[in-house]
Amino acid sequence: MVRLQVQKVLKRYGRLRVFRDLEAEVRSGQVLVLAGRNGSGKSTLLRIIAGLARPTRGRVVFYQDDRALGNEERRRLIGLVALDVAIYGELTAWENLSFFARVRGLRLAPEEGARLLSDVGLGGRGDDLAQTYSSGMRQRLKYACGLLHRPPFLLLDEPGAGLDEAGRTMVERLIAQQRERGLVVLATNEPREVAYGDIVLHLEERP
Image (tube, rainbow, N blue to C red; front, side, top):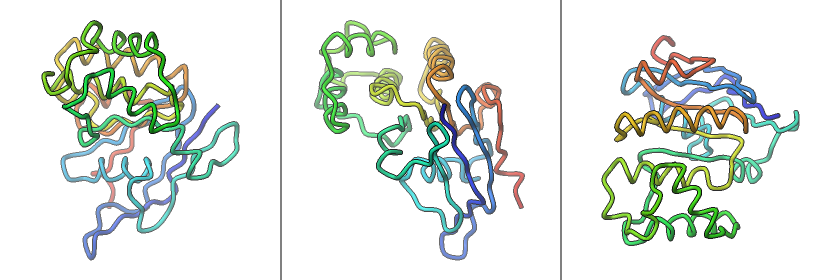
């Protein structure tokens, strides 16, 4: 069982306050949606949760079996899919997967890589350079890279961005699978994606 708490998080850039006193809790089997208009701070909050940005005040706590996790443990257990996550165009899909596996200290077996690519709709395209992919195919590859270590905490920024209807259906399937593995936090202003949430934190409604 895993759990995540956002505890009175405030973020400022100089005198500009992005949000303040945000609180939420999400547990295994649940989806937390960070919803709001463009500029409301959704992606900023997701980056804080991912450990890629610091809050001005407050904190985010990850738990596994009711034990609070340290920063290093948290990084190992997070999977992140976001628009600004790098995919290396000069590498093939398989090479991208292998690279990100090595970064995590893992060795990816060829059959596991093939399964991951098939799961995201890239079966048979593993030896193609990522730079030959469409934007939707690159987004699918980001999902494969984000899920390769079977993370209990899956963080998604605009999960359907660049995807066609088949891709959005894939995202819904992956979210359903993640509920069995752990939890999901996603940032979006798309009504269809907001509806995935068991808990919805509306940033634009904050004072």
